[in-house]
Image 1 (cartoon, one colour):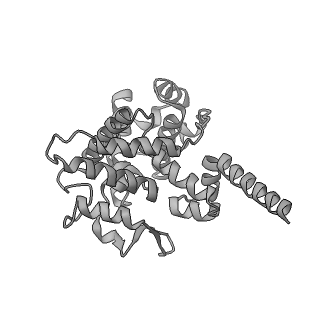
Image 2 (cartoon, helix red, strand yellow):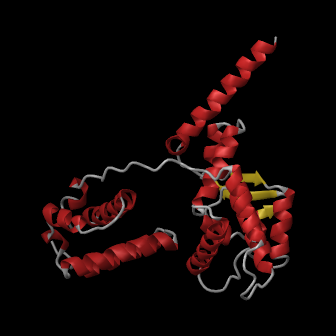
Image 3 (tube, helix red, strand yellow):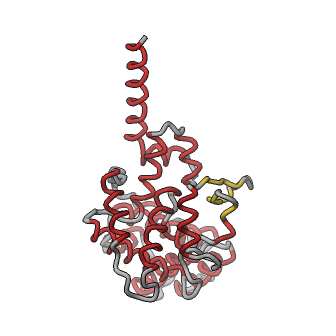
Length: 292
């Protein structure tokens, strides 16, 4: 059997990723992995790699458990491609065990911290290309995150055509069914003040989405420091989810809005808050019985 050297093999794998129409971020991560493999194994034929060598390669990763788990999945995908192509008999990465990861508890912003963050938007520095509009942009962006649950990349690249009336198109399910979320009129008004005519609300469209997201992450970091609040963009997503659950919105609905492929994912992240919601429901019912 003619086995390509690893460099040729990596290139074939990346071409297949592009043919499968994977997202640019996904292809970028696979590209980083294959570059690292070529550097680690110096162009050796893939058939010469043993499980022990791949295991020692994994030992060099200085990553958090969840990041290590994701990288291992990408490594397994690469070797599975080689196996399915007939270049190797076994997948050496399949023998590697996942690291034990204990996800940190979901910590939404309490109302007191949201108030501090909104206050910080009013005193946010006005220097730069946006000047005084900086404060309007920051407030609109924060409110979009907390009332939509969008990931920061999706919020930064949000285009005007995804808004119909007061409804935001979250995404389209695999069945072809669109998922819409009503937004408060005040949030829509702030967003239109930021960008009344542009295609995007929070991105000029110039440069790459990655650089635009990095700019917004830095801006949010400054805002949270100004508010004396610890956190990051994802905490707004958690705040959105927990607020819905505590308001009685079914877990199934929250899962759909978040775009989770399985309700088990939602349960894993928000189980304590589902329990909290149930306790509140029981307390309100018991209170009602005492009044009768």
